[in-house]
Amino acid sequence: MKRLEGKMALVTGGSRGIGKGIALRLAEEGALVAVHYGNRRDAAEDVVHLIEEKGGQAIAIGAGLETALGVKQLVQSLEEALLSHTGDNRFDILVNNAGIGTSQPFEETTEESFDELFAVNVKAPFFLVQQALPLLRNEGRIINISSGVTRIAFPHIMAYNLTKGALNTFTLHLAQLLGPRGITVNAVLPGIVDTDVNASWLHTPEGQKYASEMSALGRIGQPSDIADIVAFLSSSDSRWVTGQMVDATGGSHL
Ligand SMILES: NC(=O)c1ccc[n+]([C@@H]2O[C@H](COP(=O)([O-])OP(=O)(O)OC[C@H]3O[C@@H](n4cnc5c(N)ncnc54)[C@H](OP(=O)(O)O)[C@@H]3O)[C@@H](O)[C@H]2O)c1
Image (tube, rainbow, N blue to C red; front, top):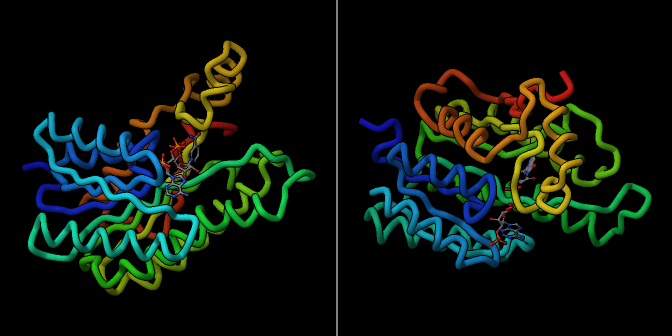
């Protein structure tokens, strides 16, 4: 039997990049995956088709996460989708993956950009967990996709780094709060991963050299490297791990 057979998972930002890798991997393990997207419905539907082609089950759910209303809509859509696919409104695994980056250095960071980063990267997961908790089964799993920048200094993207620090703090306290329900809460901290956000600089000879030399393992991270860790944290194999920040940087800056 597959490790996540009979489980329902929501992956925010499951339409592209790391989230896509996670959605594919959880579906491969047998979970029914709600593939959330912001604007790119086409990308989310492609992921659903890929999953279905391999015999898995998935649904696409759209909602902008820059507003509280969007978070509320996501929970409503999730509940409707669960009811129509399973006859039950409960789910088992919440992966808070959707996030945005910044290219503004500390000195040039605007209030607008700071607020947007915190809205999508911190406020959305906070209220998503709060509102989805009544639907999350006991023994469930919450996995927050944070970043290696909470351990490694990259001051040129300061505001983004702060959002991931907040997500780590959220992870710690949420784990304590939800322990009595058997729900585990962990964060995964990727290093540089080959996704759209990095494509412009990473897909150059200099970018490849810089990023691969950063890792002790001498290569660039792929979405599947992160997805495999999330699959473990989603499964019962990880039942005794909670409140942890799991470094997934391929040993960058050891
Ligand atoms: N890539 C890296 O090197 C790296 C390293 C460390 C941590 N991370 C973290 O890993 C996560 C995924 O990163 P990624 O590189 O895979 O990003 P990505 O390729 O840019 O994908 C981002 C995903 O989040 C969704 N999203 C973004 N803003 C949204 C919004 N306002 N409302 C709703 N959905 C939104 C996107 O949906 P649409 O396309 O539909 O808008 C997309 O599915 C992020 O939290 C990021 O901070 C990434």
